[in-house]
Length: 198
Image (cartoon, rainbow, N blue to C red; front, side, top):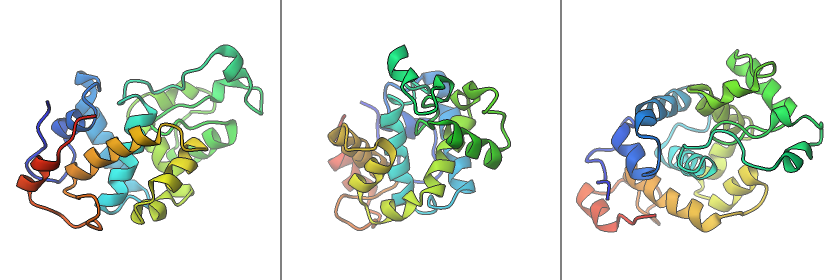
């Protein structure tokens, strides 16, 4: 069982291992660095509670950072409104649809309209999620600790809400936040007592 990091601060490999034990070992540092770059760049990711919600959703949407492209059959992917499966979900929050790729390209100055697979690479996978998070003001919902509202914006429904909640408990622990404490930091000793595996 991965141990809870001793001090909340900048994310590191140990934090990613704790949050997402199945995450690719060789990518954990890149994941942590991409998360920190996203936090520094986008609105709605300034406090620990907002960051915990963001990471929990990202961990769930990507199968613990293993899948940076939406899974689905060719028929499913062909059912996109614009008929272009090239703009299926990619990145940490599964950026979907041509207009959202266009928005990511404008904000990030990456060539994801002509090369959509760019959003499957670091740091773009995380940064594209930051674009969606900031544009839709999900930080406001996260600051209110409203996992249902955040999930609806990201997922369109409440699919796998219990799994998302488990990731959120772990992400909050990384940042020293106990459930029901309104974002108050607690002692590391107390956090170790409440640690729960996924």
